[in-house]
Length: 185
Image (cartoon, rainbow, N blue to C red; front, side, top):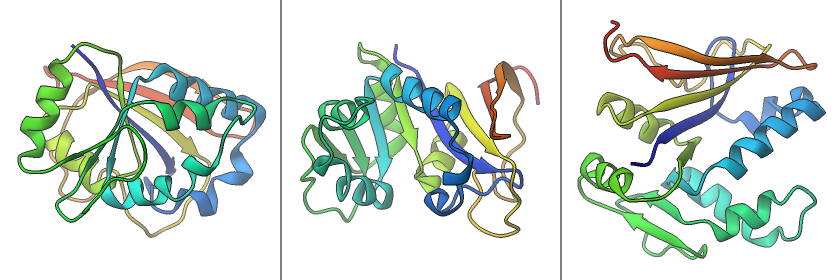
């Protein structure tokens, strides 16, 4: 069974929106290495439509980059959840429509490695509610924005998590990896 990993960049107040605007000052060499390792460890990518369109407008035009991220993202299977996307142009992309929880559940049952979801707040929240997330890979940045879309918005159902890794980086960012603790509430 494949694991679904929600991998997000967050501020201290939980904001994940527009990370490309606030994250760069905190990407020290050790942070970049952790991000690269996370991307290379997954075998498939899951995205919502908005994040997919952002990625598809950039990554296909990046090749032979020194860390192999573009090659990895461009070659791996990609699944985009959308009811409005007419056509997925980025190679190896499948559009998921209909019952998302059922389709993702089926995808997780297939053989293969981890599925990594990045960005895509609405999709991540719906998969959390459906109990389909196996791990959270949260890169917490030492910054408070005070506004913006949060991974865990007000009204999120209470859930226990078990810490499986924590790592501090030179820039002040901290990696927190959690797995759902289905027994704890």
